[in-house]
Amino acid sequence: MRREIWGLQLIPLPRALRGGGGSSAGHNPWGDIKLPAHSTSTMALLGHILPPPLPLLLLLLLPYSHAASCHPQPNATHFICTDPALNTFPSGLPPTTVAISVEFTAVTTISPSALAGLPHLQELHLSSNHLAVLPEALLQPVPTLRILDLTDNLLPDLPAGIFHHSIHLRHLVLQGNLLQALQPAWFMHLTQLHWLNLAGNALLEVPPAALRPLRSLRSLDLAHNRLHHLHADTFMGLQKLERLDLEGNQLRALPPTLFMPTPALRLLFLQSNTLQVLPDGIFSPLLHLRVLDLAHNHLQALQLPPRSPGPPLSLDISGNPWACECSLLALLQDAAPQLIAARDTRCASPAQHRGEEVAAVSQAGCDHGGDKQSPLDH
View 1 (cartoon, helix red, strand yellow):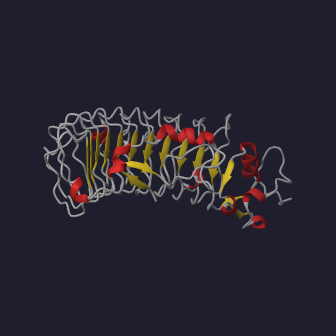
View 2: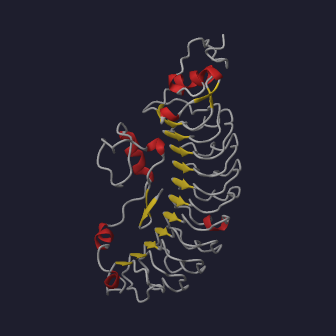
View 3: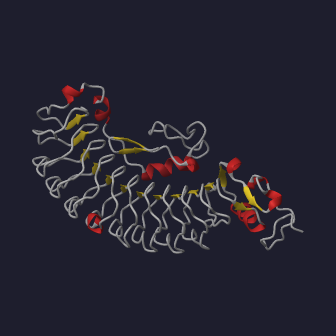
């Protein structure tokens, strides 16, 4: 389960990044995120793709009373309101406002002019309200906006031109809404976007090349939608993408060239889909991949990225019906990944190995060609 605090992702990482007791590499600024104890590089990697913390002032103000915080103060730079009884977006915010947080309220609508007169606004946090519609002109007065968080509202759609003036937007969080379709027009002007979270919606597909304008994107979260398939050019143009989360969809197959446009990818989460076969060489373009989660699919045979210098690949392949043949065993031996959840990574075939841990099956009897016979078949 993901947590949002003022739109910043505090993500209990998928198993491939979870450790037993935090990180020995240094202080973990994300609190409940557990990192592999061995991995200094993982901490450095996350620093590139997690959004920066909000100003400490926001967090320090949280304990203050709802009543006090919901009245704008003259010359204030930050406005916070979490009054569950609030049903109207506050007005009268001073032009000095840099960050707004109106969250966990009963607000259902917001007027097109709600942000007028706020020329310095950089952060807008509207999570956990009851917003079902946004006016197309809402963001037009605030072209300086850097962070927009709309987590856990009731939005089934967005106006086509809502982000046309948001050319400086860096982080956009739409997680936990009711979106069923992506409009390519949303992304046309978001060339500086680094972080896009669309998890927990009802998306059925990603239109071909819809994400292409997002040439600065580092992190893309499409987890827990209803995606059945992806087009070969779904990620075209995302050459800087480092983190991709497709967990919990209904993907049965992947195009062989799906990851060719994303050579910088370092973290890839494909767990809890219905993948049955991985195309040959599908991960070959991913020379920098450090985390790969394929857990809980229907895979019997494995594909891996080329082995590269540096820390071993963190790999979770648990919960699949693996065919423990020589080809699989040789691949794992050659790649030497750090196998996560090894106790839940078991053979479904051949009969001699059914139920055994993959890591415990011997390669005795396999020839150097890595044929597909079982080690015990002769």
